[in-house]
Image 1 (cartoon, rainbow, N blue to C red):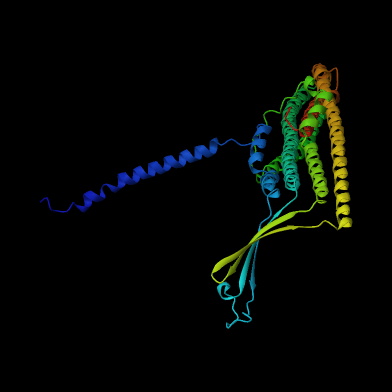
Image 2: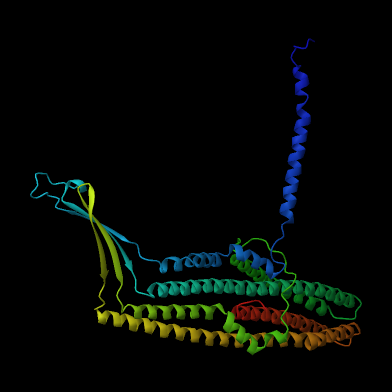
Amino acid sequence: MSPASPVPVARTLNLAPPLRRLAAACLAAMTLASGQAVAQTPLPGRSVDTFLEIAREKSPDFAAMRLEAAAARERPAYAGALPDPTFRMELMDVTNAGMEANPSLNPSKIGATKYTVMQMLPWFGKRDAMREAAEADAQSVASRADLMWLEVAMRIKSAYAQYYLASENERLTREVLALMAQLESVAQARYAGGLAAQQDAIRAQVEQTTMRTDLVMIEAERRRAAARLNALVARPASAPLAPPERIRPLPPTARLQVADLEERARAKSPLIAVEEARARSAGKMVELTDLERYPDLSVGISPIQMGNRIAEWEIMFEVNIPLQQDRRRAKEREARGMLEAARAKRDAAATSTLGELSESLAGLEAARNTQALVESSLLPQAELTFQSALAGYENAKVDFATLLDAQRQILRAKVERLKAQAEAQMRLAEIERIVGEDL
């Protein structure tokens, strides 16, 4: 074969299968890697913090208030700015009367053209009052954004407490259901040995059926709580969630002193801050209406064109005369009335906030005490009763109904503990919303 001969087609085609295999291997590796990345993405649900992180980015309510607050921050920049100047052009003697010329609108072909530029200057202090009122309004909107976040966070924390309650209740019910199956085996073994009546095994089966019915309702409650959580963070209602692993620990009692929390609420509560900012804005509006007693000044300059040249210059001063006293005084009364209303709303917000704080603290303390009582007394007593009843049943000293009742007492005690934990979490969420920060 000469050097100029073409490369054989068969040899060229033999390179294709290895390349295809290499490409397929790369594609498979990329697919596997992407699948592993998706699989490694953790589902929210293990703790409430995962939902709070998502809500900061995706909560539509909080996003709307955050954008509104960003827009409100621009108000002071234009509220205290000077009004736009005005320009006026006057064409004089456009008919060219007394001149041998036709009427015209050309400034160079008429008698004279006057150009006037005017700027209105508000009285001293008016611009500052308008700017400070706008700053107070912007602060009010920013505080409303903070309040919206605290509301969203409280709803998420409360919904997660209900999700935790339903999930743990479901797990507990399944454990007790498995235990009931064991008790049924014990009853059947004793019945087979002639030590117990067949009714004991039947009662165990009836108890299991009842618990399975309860389990259906508990599972439905867990799904409702999961859907509620997903909705709060803008996820599809049926999106999967990880099972809850823990709830937030309660703060120590030393951090829940009424006087300390009331002071923190007065200083950081967004609700009080909103009303305080509105009161400041109303005060600045009173100041602005008082300044309406003084006139505003307008200054202007007017070059006058004759032909193709500027022949004269004029300077002008203008003031408005505040003679409409009835209108001005009515506006002042309105502004003072709005100020009194804003102050009353601020005081009402403070009173309502402190009242809600005391109520939530009482609820948290009751839930904490209930949980402690169940863990220290009720639950150990129920477990001892069950162990005693189980030993007595095995020795034919108590009947099966006593054993079932002892098991129900354990289940009720554990459910009460779960309810107390969930109640404490919801009350804690309310307190954190009121004081404006996590505890």
